Image (cartoon, rainbow, N blue to C red; front, top):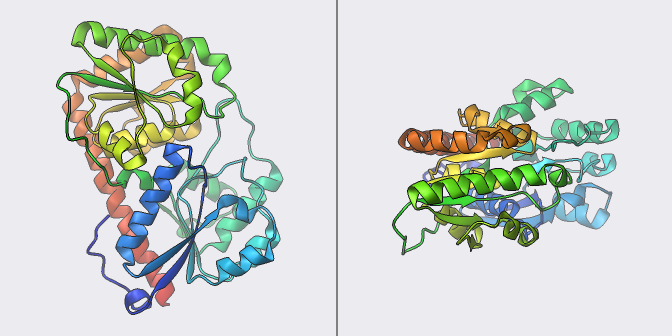
Length: 354
């Protein structure tokens, strides 16, 4: 984020209290990384700020005590990340209606996993009501924007700002081993469709890792994002596989030392792109495809039915041939997102001053 943002009159001479509603899963490195990134960006914009944390579930039922806490803030920020998700919906209509402070949606996205149903009518109506309640909605990619507009949100309210986690600050390791380094990540933290594709996923990952070990002398790392992955990465049976499990800033810093990342959990790919490392996205969700489109690299997605045919290995070798080009694209995407987030915060400030 640009730390030279001009302060608005609203926040120049007093402490700003921001109620931040977000996913509360601290076991999920991606979810935690989003929260840390958003709050870094808010503190850069408002040096005199107190951030009060609320789980997304605070919107699921009417609670007078929690409502009072929310309404004591100067403004409410919802997001980023996959807060538009059937798991959290429907929101409570009375709770939404009773929010009295200015509400802004920040870097949020719609989640729909492969094989899952569309949102129920009740869930969709509550989501649209929430977005209509907001003064501005900053979403992470064009699909979420189109989804909201399709169901009645005015296009003037929505900005495509990108995923805040791409701009999370990094702690880079002091000692970096020389040689080719490949990072792998699987989604095994709640996606019910994994079992159907398990054999194809494991085979494709193993085939790709063994190719780079044989032809590039690659060191292969498993990039752990959730404790549940302890139950699956041993099944990869990749010789010498090392597990990387740092806190989010250091995890993203480690990503910057890699030559290629093959990820399933979206924020494995987001962290890689933000660190300037070429990544290939194994798409278990609409958001995987949409992130690849957002950064201008739709070819960096491998669909699940393509895994059995060797597409992952083919795509990986192609990316490495064009590694420098993809590094530039990743860093350009980060710069673009940082600029959009800065601009969006300026819009928030203008709304507060009006």
